[in-house]
Length: 417
Image 1 (cartoon, one colour):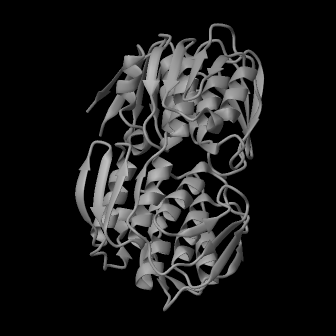
Image 2 (spheres, rainbow, N blue to C red; image 1 turned 120 degrees about the vertical axis):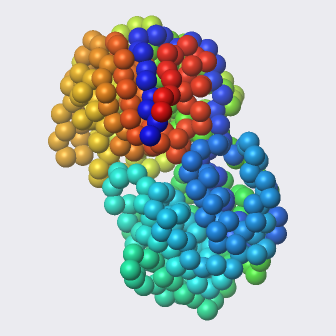
């Protein structure tokens, strides 16, 4: 199993280009199941989760004509299987996104209960309730979600909690349902809006994506998808914090600054100089960091996927900061590993109290989930001495060639077997 070794203490300097958004391409790949024909997706990040989703769609009967570099071409004409196997689904929670498209197109879906990062329950019942509102009959049996529907029909549904993948799943299913569907308390993330735009270009009739209420007029069929994936806002935020935590000067290229506003504002509050341009952000940090309190929220609030990285930064602030996690109930697993490096962090329920220290010390640490692994890389970059990170397959799930990009910025980082 691969490990990453970091010799910390070097300020990062230079430019880094952001890859396509993992959380945008995964639902688009699931959405191809609604179509029959050749789909083309560009600007695809080369990360493990994308490969997993491509393998899953292929196993369902799609023919992958090309998956080289950042371009995927796949033909969904032959999709006929209704079961998403455990061995494909168990490593990634986003794989449950095939549930809605399979029900809408084939009238049946048998999808293994999803796995992935152990950062909370992320209950699938929000998906199930939405699909049941459209007329699906769903049972949980032997670790699988088994759904059937002769014909999905439009409905008015309210999500009990804001759910990104739940909103996407029900929205995709509703595109081929009979009549009008109104979804309320929807997620507003850019990835939801993007999916709606992609589907609309393929013939769907979706209005309101990006707001709390989405209205879908069902259609009988969709054309194959053609799209380019937009830049990954979480990857951009991670490299912005990398520049700040090392006291360096990093320009993040190919990003969408409007989507990064909470991170920009909090970095500035921490005393970091942040210059925003149309498609780039430059971060400079030469002075002591000021402690900042953050509270995660669904978009457009501070993203839960950046909480761990920002906590690593606050470990080196001069004073006490309070970080509150409101989205997932088990997203402080990186705290124990940061403590191994000298961090002073107290946990009280969903709140972490961080008392800043002058310097982290390199240590052997273990990645526990995708974003926690990124926080350990950031801490290692700033630490004195060597940091050895194990279970780095978590990093590969969502960051394209992370160690190569950091090396170009001057980091002493390498991967070993």
